[in-house]
Amino acid sequence: MSIPFIDLAAQQRRLRAGIDAAFARVLDGGQYIQGAEVGELEARLAAFCGVGHCLSCANGTDALQLALMALGIGKGDAVFVPAFTFAATAEVVPFVNATPVFVDVLPDTFNMDPESLKRAIVHARSIGLNPACLIPVDLFGLPADYDALIPIARENGMKVIADSAQGFGGTYKGRVTGSIGDIATTSFFPAKPLGCYGDGGALFTDSEEIAALVDSYRVHGQGQNNKYINERVGMNSRLDTLQAAVLLEKMTIYAEEIELRQEVADRYRAGLSNRFTTPRVPDGLTSIWAQYTLKTADEAERAALQERAKATGIPTVVYYPIPLNRQTAYRDYPVDPTGVAVSEDLSRRVVSLPMHPYLTRETQELIIEAVAG
Ligand SMILES: *Cc1c(COP(=O)(O)O)cnc(C)c1O
Image (cartoon, rainbow, N blue to C red; front, side, top):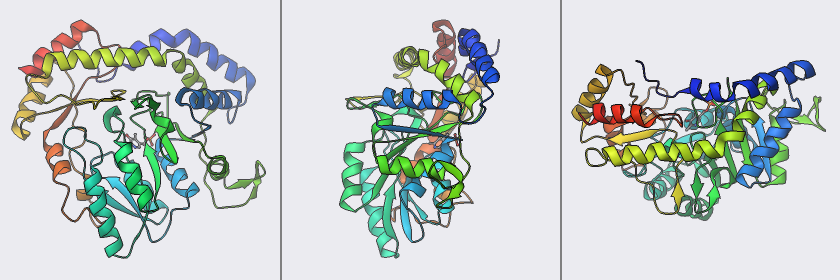
């Protein structure tokens, strides 16, 4: 028996007839770019998170880059990102000629540490950078602590982009993640909680002005809804109609899948919290559980856990084995001057287990038994 880390096939079996019919409609219509499904999906997603505008694009990385472009971030600007995240969060910053500054995370939520952010802002100023933008990440599906982070950004005149590539559908004190920050972004990479069958992404904002800029930047900086009138240097970043059609089908069951994910997370906690540190979800927040990530006592215990799981045919993954500030590509950028000790520690101790809405109780019992050892 092989146990998938994320079982996309189970979901596809459930939705296959609807997806086949949706594909047929797109093929019959022939509007492969910017077909009606794209607009429908954007309206549906905006309503889902209670925000004025949703703009789809080619992937979650482009969504972050388009956000920086629309906010006018550029040369001399410091953009604060967690050291413990997927590379895309930092990668887009040099694309717009700004400087990523790495901030540490908290040991219990794995999300950005407000105190480390304050130190990083002072440091950025001291080396001549202009603190311009903050990108908190909803790591593993748990919203960042926006009520602590956004006031720090505002006091320093900074914009906020919420990187919710892993968090779309989680809630922060009654708000769905896409509605937080000047702009929120997400990814529809297949393995994300809401994934399509290829690459895709989206931005969310309540600002009419930002929405208009993103709409222009994503189609070659077009003016007057015409790509042959170019008002600014933009990019080509659109969501395919076929992918929008897939996502519309998936949206019909997303609310139910969110509940199923929570049940899976609850069973993991019940089975493993006496053996490892299981994720903490602060009061008033819900996680979408993009990952279920344990913290072991040390690196050796993690290695033993992974070995045991592997011997039973259970895949486990380490997100992330190296903090970004120590990656070859990013090691020359500024960091919180006191270091990012928590990110370093987590990179040695975290391990993620199979997580998806279709994980059965029986399979999960097998996983818990093997992992607990
Ligand atoms: C996946 C991911 C992205 C990028 O999304 P893509 O669609 O793969 O480009 C950005 N930020 C985080 C935190 C992610 O996990």
